[in-house]
Length: 115
Ligand code: SF4
Image 1 (tube, rainbow, N blue to C red):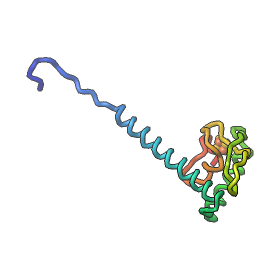
Image 2 (image 1 turned 180 degrees about the vertical axis):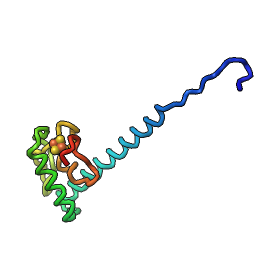
Image 3 (image 1 turned 120 degrees about the horizontal axis):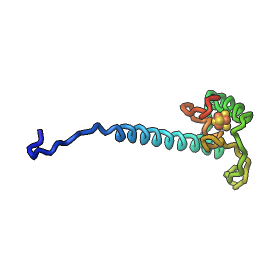
């Protein structure tokens, strides 16, 4: 009980819980982006080969993305066999992710629920 006679109202701060939730989601997303890019880059440069189940899952997802109305092609610079090459890459216009890299992360989900 406050001694000064001024009543204090303690409100439960729900925003900090939400902030924590969004922060964790953001960090998880960053982790997925990092994993997707390192897998794709490693496979492209020959540092790492994709496992069969990773490749199958990615192929299935990419087939769906390829037919999706939210997918769009963009030119991106890639390093293939030591050369820098502009290639047409498939991007999702809903989540702005590159479809190949996104498809390589098992925990990733399509924002429209297609996969
Ligand atoms: S992730 Fe989903 S919404 Fe985005 S392009 Fe692929 S299938 Fe379409």
